[in-house]
Image 1: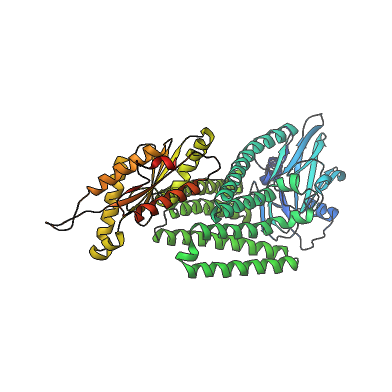
Image 2: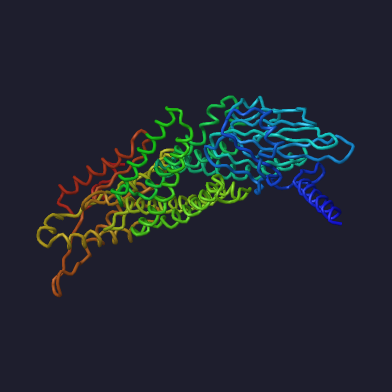
Length: 573
């Protein structure tokens, strides 16, 4: 009886282990939507040059350990690792299946397919080889194999100096295509948004010649290149014949992108002016990280360069928050956009970095968190730059308006006069119509200022401006020409009408009385020079010069008059 119990126990144990072993096999007809890491066994040997046969013997002898994670992650600078798993085909048909290694930066991947202890197929891939040498034109690494009836062992060796993250998918060819199409749409959207922002801000820089738009365009462009480098799009489309650059592109572009991010932040927040000490500290640190990275690159120390670039990004994350906070304290209205954008970028970057380092699960969301955060960052900063543009344009219009209007008299300045009159002057020349100009000057204005002070002189100027505005026509252009001198441009106006208008203004000015105190009032007069032209060979400035000479004649005749007057105007027509 005891012997029967012992036999049954052995049978149950063997059955249990058989079921457990089968549970770890990959079934050829089962659909695996997630990575198959939990079906894979792992072996890391001290010998980096361990042969395939030696690794296979270690697998058969039970030296491989079972993985518990769907995505295998060994961190940065890990030693080469061997992976193995069973594929079970219980049908009588040969079935084609693909392995998809959904990481773009693995240096070497050797895949061996063994059946009945015999090697039946193998692939040697990785981004240390030319892109054209891949068996499939895919940004990730793909192999295929016809699995015959029975069990097949897949043995894989992976080597890389970069973060050894290995999400392996077991898929049909159609599933790989569908997965690629879905990813292509999402990346197309991201790249399209960022490229549009690059072009938009670069055009704004060309138009406005201001630094933030240029630095932001450069920052977005370098991020786009960095993203293309670690997603594999860069090697597939931009530098397929440069495996050396493919290896070094990630750390180098990390440093370049971070430098451009600092350049944008310092310029956008005006840190050099508001926080000069912080500005100097950041400049020194940026130079230090850049020099260290350059030395590591020249020494061909890839892992060291990668760690420097990652620490530089971490430093960037810290200081973007600091810059946002200190800018808020200086009441920079754009700091809130910058701070919120920085938080999105930091959260996304930290999630992706921790996923690559193996501290958190690696999946499509954690892998692409940096991209999602960067898109949110780009949109927020684009809104900030758009508001900055609107404010700049508004301030510019206000400045132009101030430059065009004399604040004391509310009349046009010389700058505004030429801007308004040039089109009207061109029309009058084309139509050969009469055009007149009146120049008037307050008589003995210097004595008024000397005797009563400049405040009273300002009141005189303002009152005179208001009076001639009331007498002028809507088509006339009135200008404070300088000091106590005023100019009026009269389109479609002959000399007689211009003299009549000037004389009417002169009489109105004579009637002005400005109260000095409760009982004393002040009157003043003005002299007028009038000129008219119908000659297309005479310029606007020549016409003004003629009116100025007529003003001089009016002063010589005793002031408070119009020259020429109505009685002798015929000789001047």
